[in-house]
Image (cartoon, rainbow, N blue to C red; front, side, top):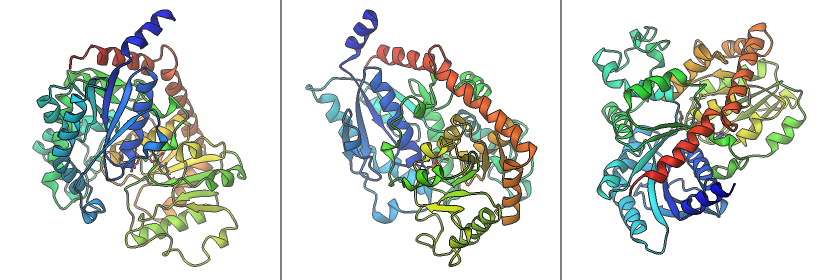
Length: 459
Ligand code: UDX
């Protein structure tokens, strides 16, 4: 006890500067990590862009510094993710360095031990090097998809990338069980920029003083083995971050509609399908309507997040036929944004129809909720393949977004024997996730080594 107390005292006064990428799926894990490290005795400073700024008033224990990202309104709302990431990595260089220089020269503040940057903000490597500040990265996605990103040069050499439509069903022999259609690509007007971002992500992670993962040893063991062979830097799989504390929703950029929970309270145990496709994915109107009819025809109760902007060209629910919800007699509830972690933990939940963003995937596993997988782009495709074919805790929605296929997949998962087996497997995975987080579990041990590692870094 006493010794731990002394260690905490010594560490007090050690400050960490965290720099999240301003997208919901990246802000959440970075702020959760901040909470975890704060509980270990570090003081926390967050540098963030004006664009998608977190709300500092939710975090009285942290210090926030906002930097101008220089994005115009059109740039900030552009649908081309690659373009946005490229702009952020170019436009943040000067404001970020200026902010860091100021923080480093502020004698009234604690000494800074290191920078913890989102891995996609790869420009931070050069800045940290210039300032001789150690840099650790947080990779917010899974390890398995990262290993695929790291293989991009090889995949390009061997002709798997760029993807050709005629090759979609071809196996990627070097990365079983992936097929070409599972490779983590993103639709963009500028494919070369996409490859540059992936190269920046991979190379500047390799050049870091360590990498933190929101994942756990038992889940991604084989990818971690590969990673440790290819990346001779300290690797800390300390996930799942959101299970360290219950203060989960404070970093939400949209207001979470609490009516979801009271609606769920009135549903039978394990009966509800929760459908949500994260913060970025977009659908066309035809897909949206197939989803609506698929859910309606499934005869199961459903809670559906339709984020404003989810349907291209629509504000919100306009494409739905009039009276659609009324005909369901309360069997369906549509909201703009959910308190997702509470929803997944609710006893009424039966399945999660997801785009397999990494946070959603991990949150579903940690609550033992089986998945229906509909990946849209990037790492989601790899995550989805692992969910359905490696961990076998979900079913892929095959043959496109069609109401008959949706109905059939929901039935397989909710009614048939196959679904029961899937449910059993995800319960086991949930157990393992919990064990990792207990005293002596791999995630806890990895967190302790991270704390020791940070404390030894020379700045
Ligand atoms: C993006 C990418 O799409 C994803 O592939 C990558 O792994 C991370 O960045 P996003 O689309 O936002 O993520 O999905 P996801 O990773 O699942 O993160 C969404 C977060 O928002 C989750 O933490 C989830 O709990 C939260 N959320 C989602 C809500 O709070 N309410 C909702 O209604 C939906």
